[in-house]
Image (cartoon, rainbow over all chains, first blue to last red; front, side, top):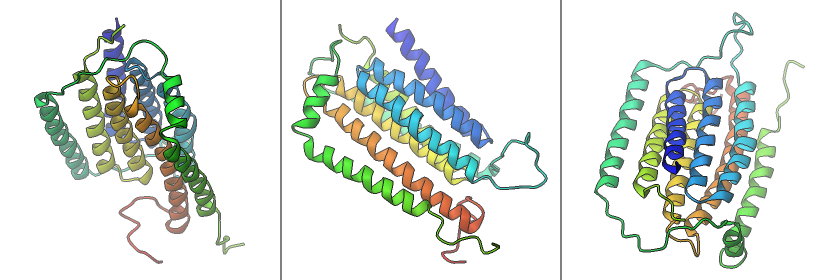
Length: 175
Length: 104
């Protein structure tokens, strides 16, 4: 049962990834990324990381994906001949696509052979079914306190920096 | 209850997603498409960390690392989109091949 769920969500994530690679419409790619992230969150939960699955959904789907869609809509190249029905196409030259898929396949071959040959010595107990939130919280507040604070400062700096960068500093000369 | 899913499965799925992310980042002629590929690669790395973290139930170091990766990815994509908006205002295009001059 668990294995069937794993195969379903893994197929969902990988299939969405293939769709992102092959589609020419960037908006479709963003929605396929939503499916891929959903599958990844389910895989996180199946691997015993319940808190990280929820965090993945909230951060990626709630934040990053909405940001990406805003970016796609704001940077649309305006073509007067297009109507509202025309999809916003991303031109992919054939040579680039062949190179991209070739590089991806080659990397997957190398990684697969390495994983198939590896013999991991795993002598720890596997995770039982209890929640990981308590362990994560205690670890974050004790032994990982400094990285936690640094991550907070990094987020603040990124927020201020992004707002400063996106500010329109040179007003439209036509006005 | 021990999880019945072998570690090998997680690693193969993560390798496939990482390769797909790299192929997307190479293929797309749009900065936002490249960002989508980067997100896929970061997620694949997270899946590896979490799969190995199953065998460390006392400290969960892999999951903690994955949590920090998620935080840094959120910061990265925010700044990247701000830069994309500036580049679009300046050049009128976000094709990385078209943005070849430092000053126009």
